[in-house]
Image 1 (cartoon, one colour):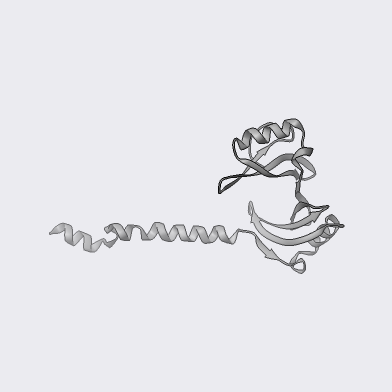
Image 2 (tube, helix red, strand yellow):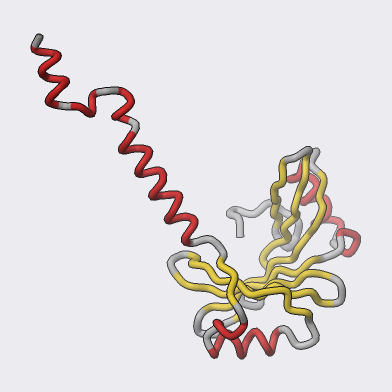
Length: 168
């Protein structure tokens, strides 16, 4: 009898009710993650310093779109472009500093060591696109987009084709 009284006083002991708190926390976390996802914006919504950098860096390119997101606690802006038939995406900080460039590179134009490194990391997945990754003016990695069945992934190697100590 005491157990029944105890359960009535502490209703969260019901197994179904114990799921409520974790579920609410998971949903809140998902909403917070979604809020940090890329958000499409227009050129007019770019801060003046970002717009100036974007205009300078996209001369002769076709601009596909603008995005913004929070990365490592700071707002950044992305400009997606096409240049001479390949993608070139820019990341610009709120103060107008060009922080990152991802530029598509044909696989056959990569050095033998970069090709070998990407293929080793991809294992039996197919590499469908490769981009050079430049941060603050320095080439830091090559990134390959991979496909194996219905699974899409990415692999990275350093500029010399060697594994990275951390992903860029």
